[in-house]
Image (cartoon, rainbow, N blue to C red; front, side):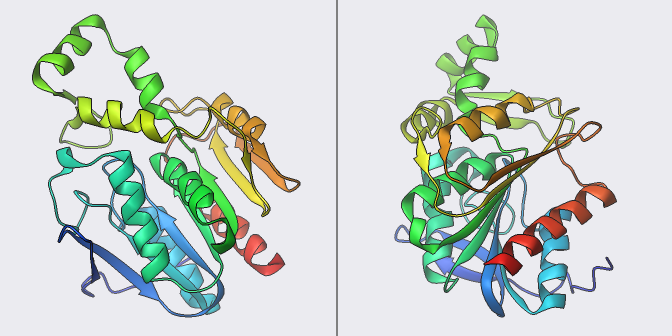
Amino acid sequence: MTNDIDPNVEPGFLSREDGTRIAYHHSPGRAPGVIFCGGFMSDMTGTKAMALEAACQASGRSYTRFDYRGHGQSDADFESGTIGLWAEDALAVLDQVTKGPQIVVGSSMGGWIMLLLARARPERIAGLVGIAPAPDFVLGMWDGFSDEIKAILKRDGVYRAPSEYSEEPYAITMKLIEEGRNHLVLQQNLTVNFPVRILHGMADPDVPWRQSLDIVERLQGDDIVVNFSKSGDHRLSEPADIARLIQTVEDLASAS
């Protein structure tokens, strides 16, 4: 699909209680709307977010994308962010920018945020679409760190991890890990009275595809489907992956 969206259009800004401004783009349209929750250190101009916007605008559907604080065009320093703060940012966008039922799409860490939104506002959710969702990732992250890295985190409060997705290292803070433990979603069952779709690549080097099965075991609902791509990586941003994502979202929206 051709993306005709003008990248020079300025975002809107939603002011939070502490004065932090959250950048967003909202396209009005028919319900159910679609809201995109990005991943860790990603922003709302990524391939999937933009492709979904183009698809929703073409079909006249409401669409919202945004940057968590410390990400993209939003205020604040990245290292000050936590799962709780980013979830509050997403909840504020859901409450104050969107109207009516929403299909929440969550990519990687956004899959964790997506489930927190579903837990907080089940009445606003028309469906969930997780893309390599990574709920509770701070647990596996900590367990996977060497004693040396754990010592750095305890001493300095931050570890700068190299990443194949960015020239800049990922800043992992001790605060992120400790605060994230207050927002775990896979430690108990979650009732979902709406459809859930999960897309996951089996060649994902960052979030094991079997974790999606753990998510499914915790979700209590009648319409939950997982779609595995044997060759898919973590980003799932290849043309076939994007087409599958757009179709999945449209199928959910049409059935609502």
